[in-house]
Image (cartoon, rainbow, N blue to C red):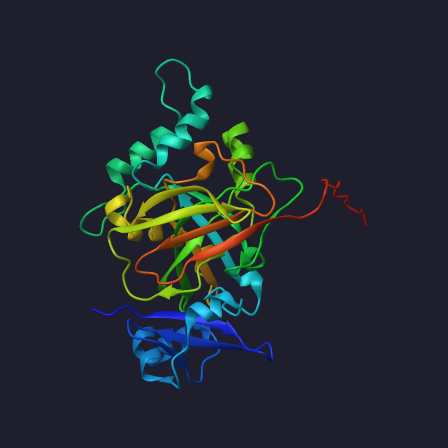
Length: 333
């Protein structure tokens, strides 16, 4: 069955325009400026995003690769108030994802004792894919930021002065809109770079929360419908135009220790995350990162992630922001 993908581009007058791409071409979706407005209309009309977008495709075909190269494609999801767009995720969710984490934390274990990471991974392997609609084992969960931290494709990911590392995390993110009655609606899936500080995390696992408070980037395409069970892609780092590092990554439920529905339940079970009108970007985790292969990134490196059925890559350069950490002073009233 053909897959539809939604994209959002910025026009010369700084307004936005929604695009819909199927397996043949990409065209403008008339009457809608972004995915959120299309989703609100689809909920109101009790139809699907694919049906509504397909019924309103107009005009000549759009060359999406050229639009991406020109820097006109934005992250495919946004909210007019960035504080109402949540970035969060789950870790230790993929087969093999515990290996790198366990190496980082092994020094904290004594004898044959399992690290907390390995124990959580094994619990996910045993109970992360419940059958018959049951509730499964809850995963590791982290908060990453709000819409201010969301970076468009081809746009730099900042390495702040307080960070010890800026590392790739190639994965898939689920995109959600909360309906008026608090129902989470899954809009689709994006390629993602969850970009984290692995050196900070390695120092002490209790610093995981600090290591995740960074920017993240989404690929230009929102894939509608179900995610294929077996997604295979490649993550690269280019330095000075040459390939520094490359590695395949696997995702989709075939390669995961948790089902997507189980990860969704354990996020949206909290009332806080079912606030009407909010957008949620949820990162599903990865088992691949250049840091575990000894790569130390630096200013100017370019992260590149690609995977079918997405037709466009996600690329972001790394940019140092600030020369030294400044003391944050709090004023007293």
